[in-house]
Length: 138
Image (cartoon, rainbow, N blue to C red):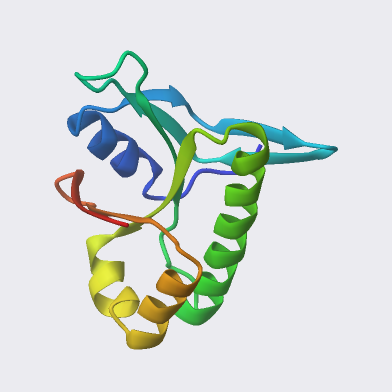
């Protein structure tokens, strides 16, 4: 099983504060003979529905030497996880979780915004100090 990102617990706590029930830590998916471990699986019951909304969250810290390299890795991982979820758990929506600092300092750049739009990446932005969700970016 892969190691947890340094912000793993912060995102978990932020989701719980936001009313999400953590159902998987990590969320295991197997497609054919390939195993995937998405950092978190969560659900929230909606008042008007008997079934809840289900999400998967991949946490990334972007603390490596190159933000661009970290972005390449996160994008590839997110696209593969999204495909695996589509095959095995299509009701679950995948989010890439990043800190508010990373969003402000790196993800606000036009090329990164264009990439998120092109590949339809959903982003969860959290405050690592208060452990709260700042923004859900569809």
